Length: 606
Image (cartoon, rainbow, N blue to C red):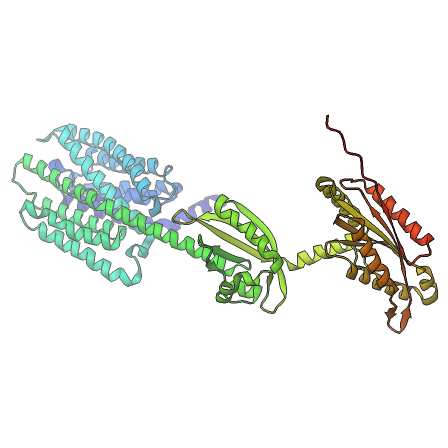
């Protein structure tokens, strides 16, 4: 019983709406029967079918039963004053209900949202076919019933034609009006500031229709098109639907009352012709005005979508923490997101003016080489580079640059960059820990082994020589034993600094461990280059080391190994340098010795 009460509660809540719906259908049905009466008692414009069809399309399927029952009752009430309660009104009422149900049953599953103006063309195509099929079936039954139960001067074909045209027109015009009214509500009147204009424009159309249908001249009927088109051009579907509804109502009432340009005479044939001309006139007005309303609506929807899309993308770009830049085909900056100020401290105008000056000098060529090919080959590229903050420091930016065609087919670039300074610094610190000696900052054995292998591989390809200097700090153990490990560490750091001052930037200084150091020298042609470096190192190491209040006298022993041109044996090169170091120590230290690898004999051609 509880479940029954729960099911009954929504029905009770819907009773006022169902009562109002029943009243609307009954009144519109009575009006259609009595005010637009056509040949053999059929209406020339059937309103309530469109109302029921629109209500069904905009209601959940579970509510259809209530609306159909109320509509059947309303149709019987509307027929009662004219046709009584015989079989004819019952069958005609059932035809009215079933045609609206069948049309809604065809359209609803095939159109996801009947109120979506973006789908208006598909909705009308599917709805038009569904309504035509449903109205054709109901017209066959109604015409056959009328012809059989109430014999008269009109043939079955005329009865069928009158019913079909009046019900199809009513379903299209008033079905559309009902759908828009239920879904849009007061919004169907358009923006608030233009509602008064809409009302005035629709009133102008209604007044024009009334004036035209008070005249008996057929030639002036199409003077109604200018105000109708003006209404459509100004208000699109918001003007088209109510204007067409008023034109249909006024034209049908006037024609049924014997007024207007379609009143030809008093015979049966004249009544049929009058109904045909009225329905054809209403159909022509729809055919002329609807395409314009449809095109204007689609244009408005497209404009709205473009504006909304642009607003969304601009909002994403303007409020993104990433730096977004659009670079035009001429390499000019067409758009710079406001995040440039938060990221780099510069205003958009300052960044646009300075641009390449802000890129670290070592990264300018890399950045250009990354971006320029995108204009020719397209695609996407990624780069990490340094850019100067307004406060003076450089920050690391990770950027993705993608080529995109502009409206004219020319290639533009879209740049998206973010601050990765913390990440890069962490990576550099990790690399420092893995490949650098923590005490001196020189390369450690891992980096030495990697660079030695690469150097020898290049030397093998280029037929050049590689030199290796093994360096020992003489009597380092005595420094540790006499002055302590802290002084020994300071001595090692000073020793490393002096090595760095004596070599080229392309050479690699290494601390192998303890007081053992090495220098890797590439692209040398003669041993004299290595001898010059060794002489410079020995002379530099003889100078006193001032370590705070402590002054130490130190020296270095150096063993030099040099491979033959094109040779790439790392172990052989290390053995040469190690052997030469042993000889330097045996010679009394504070000196250097050189060992070279003999050149391999040339290989004879086969």
